[in-house]
Length: 230
Image (cartoon, rainbow, N blue to C red; front, side, top):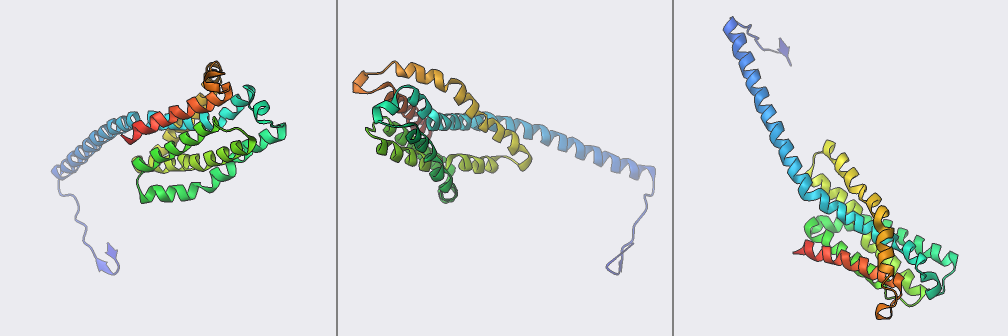
């Protein structure tokens, strides 16, 4: 046959032994590939158990801390801060512009540092913001705390998405992202029950039940963040 004007001779198989040799080499290669696949699957399972429960817990707490204002509303935050229905809607909405705006910058910072440092820093930041929401005394303070919470939480989802791509191949990322994202459903499932229990602390330390929702759930995030930094 000719390639680029150069004749390359092709030698035919001379005997049955040549065919058997090629088949043996092919089978050996397939066995090696099979062994590698098994080892790869074991490694991926270990990575899943090491990474996914923690990452899912992060997103669960993130979703819990951004949506707990709904439970605080049921506990009387509007009356205590002199809010109207429109004020509550503004307090909900102010979170998202800051949340979206900070995402690109947060991922750039994570690439400059490393995920094991940047993600716990994000957790500390939003845990502090959530806790401070329980200390506000007026509507303006609530708006400021919600905006700060959006800035703090904005880097988590894109950051974890980038982090997962560092560990898994492209075709393996979809399932892991689905598991991570499903934590939001779990937060919605028990967030109300947790808030109902916390509301029973109403009056302790001179704080209303809605304030304790923010404080306790923020402290839970800070506790996990401190564990991550160790």
